[in-house]
Length: 329
Image (cartoon, rainbow, N blue to C red; front, side):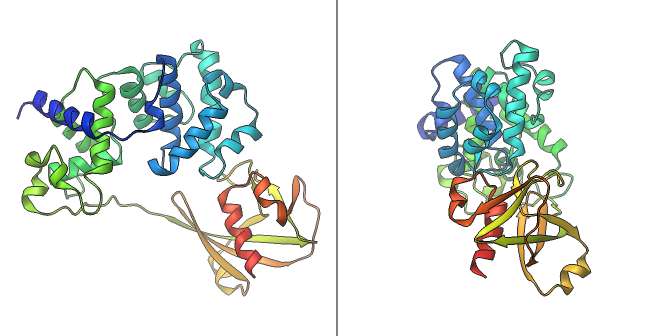
């Protein structure tokens, strides 16, 4: 089948089945660029349905590049609170500042300049080029990877490598509607070619799909390795107030409020009789001792959290999980 016919089939499906998403509702080119940048940052490691309400609130409070570049950090984190991976928010603001200092207030429209912006790698840069600037690019996200793996029945390690998947993208060809086309292919992966129980009867690529012909839809997973690390969180409590500190020690949750913590060895973790919890963060499995046997003390940069005001303070979900656990014990 000609690539022209492939693109027509995909776009016909998209025009009749696309989801109504807030970042697709723009009123101007500048509007579109800003919405695309913000949504792509938010969608890094976060599902669409989770992002929607955060995006809508963010755009309402911070409607453009100028406002974003000048907003104070506390307001920024308040708009991002609950979405996690807070470095994305900090990088988003840094990017807005750099857009004004280096690109005269305009989002750049080439790969090299986009990748020079904080928090933007290959995928995000290519997604922006396609969606915001209608460039003939197909970004390789997890959804498109899954579509390709099933279309070509890719199972072996060398077959599912980034290099091979990028080559296989040529199957899609290109379209004059590059912005819609990139989103259309991602949409097929997200809503039709799902990880489990794909909806093949609704897929515009069913006839091209080797996995469908073989009735084998199992996806070869990437080899992911989560680092296991051990920590001790020190819980200082006085009159229903808990001591938190601004994190300048660890790379995760930098500059956010956490309980005083230190990394410990596996043997110390295993031998401790204190309450323990597990928290997953990005590619790290954190095993944490909750040490409540401490007298209250003064620590540089500390903050006393009144347990009755927890919802009024900007806290990462990581800190809230620990607080919730110690409140029960």
